[in-house]
Amino acid sequence: MKKSLFIALWVLPAVLFAKPTIKFTSLNNDFGETTVGKTLDINFEFTNVGSDVLYIKNIIPSCGCTTAELKKKEYRPGEKGTITVKFNTSGYNGRVVKTITVMTSDPDSPEMRLTLSGTVIVKD
Image (cartoon, rainbow, N blue to C red; front, side):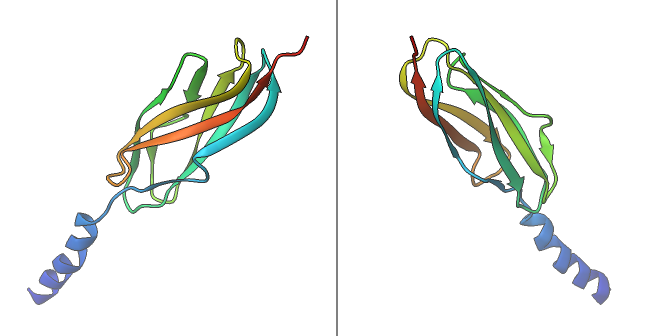
């Protein structure tokens, strides 16, 4: 009886306090200078540094010129993932800042904002 009570008291806190935690290598990516008309591929890498499964619920780019792709939506503790963003520079000239909202099951960061920025140059 004492042994099972000890196990229950030891395991219960681990279950109650288990949570996913998303950690990005960087929330910002400056692509520098590029010429108009190019489509840029930008990666945002992350790791589930928590103790429970992390779910990526949704990824929402700020406009139609930007798309975001993720191979899967479920990441075990310690597992890494990459959000691949494509930004079409057509129609832009000058400084550009775009955001991607990532919605997760991380209770401390249920909504994270990724930013890509740089300068689009029109060449004659």
